[in-house]
Image (cartoon, rainbow, N blue to C red; front, side, top):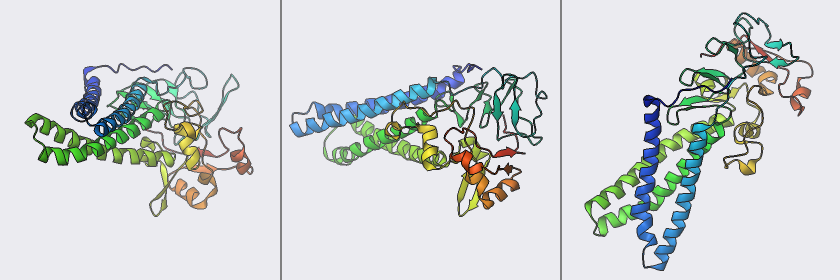
Length: 341
């Protein structure tokens, strides 16, 4: 189904406009109050330092703007309006194990089902939900591998734009850290030593303090999302506690396939381009590999059963997991509560 969303209402535009105002304000004040005086200085060392700082700052700002635009306008991923996701009503398919054989010969293996064993159904979109898919009331669409709805970009974070969002936070954090670091010396020394106008002193202190505060907030936000990515979890799965507590603060997601593959599932297959806004993750967002630990460790199996999830494995499970041609391994999860719309 095409991504349908009447996003550009006044209430949705205001947070987006606020982000652009903050971005423009910090960049403008930093350029006028810090970079321009250095670049126009008659001292060669100060001028050279100003040129280097201008190149670094503008490069980081360019990456922030690029990732912001891509995260804002990229379709996060929607459920196809075609078999095997299309049905007349919720009662059309009552397959108890999450497997459905359609008339076209396409087999769908799902690990998230209702308590009855039936496939998850979206009454708003009139479509079946793939694993990790949730309906967003703001975007009015089912989003593939939905992480959360971000009001600051007026878009959902899903399978297709999760990397752009993560890079946006990363480059914004690095840019703010660079601005704060280069302004700290000037703010401490020049403000109290060199004679300057009140407004210049005020705006220097303002942009330094504001950058530090925003940087600290983004640092916590980025570390949280980096940790979720390394564990193979989305924000919704974490908030709904759709993971297993292993003791000593450890958690295991059903879709945790190891640190390297978890990062690949968001940042793309080639680690050389993880920090670039391309090299998107492979797949279509409809099917996901289940981690081997979810079915092989007794402690995990017991914890899953306590949450109402039953994991069944075949005798050749290890072979199927290790096979590069297997997109969905043998474990089938039944009895997991349906995700909230």
